[in-house]
Amino acid sequence: MHADILQQSSLRELRDDEEKPYELLLLADEKREAIQQYIHDAKIYILEKDAEKIAVFVLQEVTTMSVEIKNIAVAEAYQGKGIGKYLLREAAQIAREMGYEDLLIGTANGSIMQIYLYQKEGFEIAGIRKNFFTDNYPKPIYENGIHCKHMIVFQKKL
Ligand code: ACO
Picture (cartoon, rainbow, N blue to C red):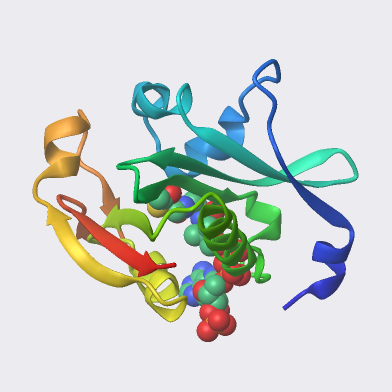
């Protein structure tokens, strides 16, 4: 854990009048149109270091009891330093304070690191959105040499 980066950074909700951080959002979701489907009725949280936006996560209500992390991304230069883990914990804390009971997050069947990270952070498999990527994305997506067809949905009790 690079505690110094987190000490020099601050997390806050993006205001409605601020530009959406597409450069970061596109790291987690390669289709801008897909991001536009959820970004306008979601809450966007950004991690800033020296006025630079270095990470983001997006929360969207699913039901009155559950909320989903629709997008989570750390700028490439800052990946692998514990920031993703920190953001997942902060997202859980924020969702808990908002009164939700469940936090959801989905990722592709080929996203091995994300599948590892979410389970390590206490998320459990709750379901599969079968053919989510083949149905919603025009080109085949490959990660770790695996054709990403389905979305695995994880859930954490808050
Ligand atoms: N390969 C293998 N393991 C890794 C790697 C890697 N390249 N990078 C990190 N890890 C491990 C770490 O060792 C750590 O495990 P540990 O606790 O056992 O040491 C764990 O993964 C978490 O590492 P962090 O440093 O907290 O992860 P990071 O800050 O990189 O954030 C994230 C993870 C958000 C996935 C980031 O890498 C990223 O932005 N990737 C591109 C966008 C993306 O894929 N977003 C998620 C898509 S799904 C969605 O948005 C809902």
